[in-house]
Length: 495
Image (cartoon, rainbow, N blue to C red; front, top):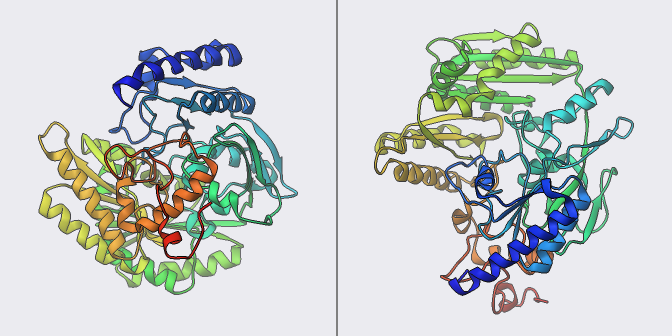
C-alpha cells in the first residue's frame, strides 16, 4: 500500500467496522488497538502483525456477511480458528479483517450409521472424538495440539498427527464442506458419501490454507474404536538404532497406528517439563502403538518388540493400562512446549523425508548444529518420516536468531535434497512461502496461482501466504501477468 492509499484503506476499515457492528452486534467486532493485539500472531509467535479489524461471527451467516462486506470494500481478509498453526498461516493482514471462527463450535450431527460427523469449523479436534465415543467411534487425525486446535484450522493446513501413519491426514477424513468463497457465495462440496463426481474441488480446499475462502461446516469420517490398543516405549542408545528399528518394523509389513521418536535433547526437555520418566541414559526413545483386532495386535506387537531388541533397545516398557499408556504419551505430546524449559526461544520446523534416509538426514542436522552452535532437538513421526526439528536460540544474544533461521532453512533444504518436502503437516503459511521456489518451478507456481485465482481473482483471501510474492518489487500477489509458460509451450490455454 502506498502513502496515498492509506487514508482510503483506513476509511474502508472504519466503514466496515460500523457496517459489521450493525449486522452482527457490537461484541462481534473489535477495533480497539490493545484488544486487536491479542490476535497479532498464531502459533508462530515471532511473526506478528496487528490486524486492522477482528470479527467474531456467531454463525455461518455472520461469516457470509463479513466476507461479502470485505469483497464489496476490496479489503483483504484472513480466517483464523484457535490460532495454533505453526507456519503463520493465520498471520493477520495489517490492512485487513481477521475472521475468527472460534464461536462456531456446534457439533451439528454425529451419524454413526454413516460413520460421519458434521461440525462447525471452530469445534476442537478432540471434542469430535469425545462426542462420537459413546457410539463407539472416534476422529483419527490427532495433532499434538488436538485439545485446543480447531477442525477448521486442521482442514486449512491438512493437519496430521501421531496416528496418521496408519489412518492418513485430514484430507483422508473430510468428505464434505460448506465454505464461503471470496466473493461471498456459499458453496457446498461433497457430503456424507465416500466420493463425489467431477473435479476434486474438496481436495483443493483441504490444505489451501485459507487462500480459497472460509470454511463454515465440515463433514468428517469417523473411525470405529479399535478392539485392542497396545503401546510400547523403547529406549535406544541413539537415533541411528531407533531409526533402524523403525525401518525394520515397517519393512516387515507392520503398520503401527503411531511410531514416534524423540532424541536426547527432546527427552531432556520433556523430563524437565512433565517428568515423564523415560529410560535413563537413552539417546532416543521410540513410542510404538498398535491397534485393531486383538489377535492381530498381539501377533504384530511381538514382532515390533523383537525388532526393537534386535536393533539395540536396552529397555522396553509395555503399557499395562490406559493410565500407563497416557504416561508414555505425556512426554511426546508435551515436547514442543517443553522445549521452553531448556531454551528461551525456538523455531518449530516441519519437513518430511522418505523414511529410508532418516538416519542420514539426522546426521546432517547434527552436523549443522555442531557447525553453527545452534542446538536442535528432534521429535518426530518416525513412521512416516515427518520431521519436527526444534531449533533452539536465545533472542537476547546478538545474531543468534538469524543463525537459527539459517539452520531452520538449511534443514528444509536437506529435506528437498533427499526427496522430501518443506512441510509435512504444518502448511506453508508466511514462514515457508520463500522456500516454495526451491521445490517448484515458476510454471508450477503459476499453475497453482491459476487455481487460486479461479476462486479469488482479486486476491482478497489470505494474501501473502503460500506463494512467494511479491516476486518482484511492487508486484501484487495474484495471477501471472502476461503469457503463462504452459500457454507459451502450447500445452494449455489461459482463459
